Length: 568
Image 1 (cartoon, one colour):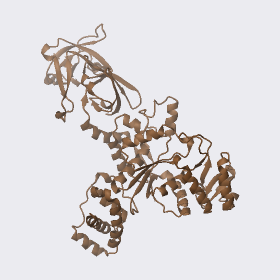
Image 2 (cartoon, helix red, strand yellow):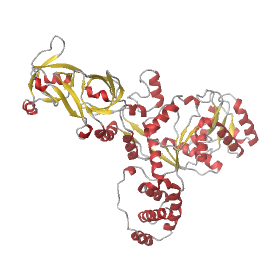
Image 3 (cartoon, one colour):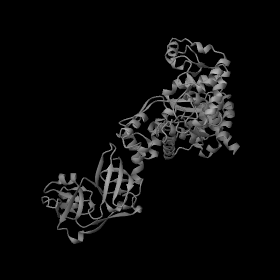
């Protein structure tokens, strides 16, 4: 296996060098090997080790030798378009095992913005092998939604997120205390008792506060006293460049007192690390090599770099991507939570929200999100996602997988007069027109049917409609005294319908029709009936309601089916 790996890496290293003026990049070579040789993904360490040695060997050659060596091995490979490379660039500076992490805050369930980070991390894990850490960052008890721990895991499972290790930061408080004290001993952190407003004034003027000059011993004493202090009485600050061009970077807070009960640990702890401190410690101890994060974290990456340098740790590769905006959908967790509390939204899975569970409830498949996020990639440019794009990707998946059924919204019961006996019976239609092997569904037909109010009104008095795969009828009569509409049998054949200019409509037999509700994306509901064959449907089945759209089964009872509408 080792010799085979080296041959593969050697060839890809030569090709990468020839394409890039004689200098191959280890990360690009590893990415190429992993993406074209799936069987080697479990050998990530072997590949990375071989790449380091072989790239050095190849880069030591002159360009002509590189080309000659590559020609011996068949020359440049034909450029193939790979689905997994849509917008997804290779990781830079890959040396050894790749370690990634996805670290949400448990303030609520995941939304489509989180899905981007989760999916990209997952895709890079597939490409490079290595390790993926799932970390819940819950060191601000004021921002923790107790139910979020479970909801986030459920969302990740739905997304097919494959983590190798799970970390919950509120379990690691003693570790953060240990490194805070060590930082003080290194002379790179100090206890600050300044009033917040006073410190800000000094900071904005690029002036150090008096606390910065305290001795290590004085800082250690105050640090130990912090655990009995009141909130706001003191903080631990990391020393940075007090004249840094960005005031936010100057001597940032590492530790502070928070007087708020934590959902998991109760009142056991009062001193909590700020995100930049706990994240740096955990990324280092977890061996994280590459961090994917939004460009709104650019300043945080710089803050964390100071901490890495103070401890003498290797800084991971920070990959910043642009903001993801979605049209006509609420992505803010805090606004969604407020809306739920105010009864504006029915819950975290309200169809108007951009949460993963709301999207999944509507019948959007995770494969559609995978393709979307890989296509967007991890570029710095902001990206706006339209529902039209999501629906287009999802439709490609559902077209083949979704069986067809008749659904009649805003139904009107119609009795067909003078229907010949030979036209009555059971009408069979395929569950899917392109897959006859799936079988047929059966619609009992005795001349009593439900039609949509829209179709009946469009036909008007004297109008002709063709019931799909059944008969043609003519509206000659006014509404009968029972509130139903009457129509006369006109003819049986499709040619007669065409000659008469009849519209072809779906219908549902009134006998055994199933009461149906469809919840729309704006949270309104459409009522109607679905054909009796739908009694076999189960929760989570996604079907196409003919002439209406794709919908997911949310509840399936004997007397009623509730759907959530996906899209046309």
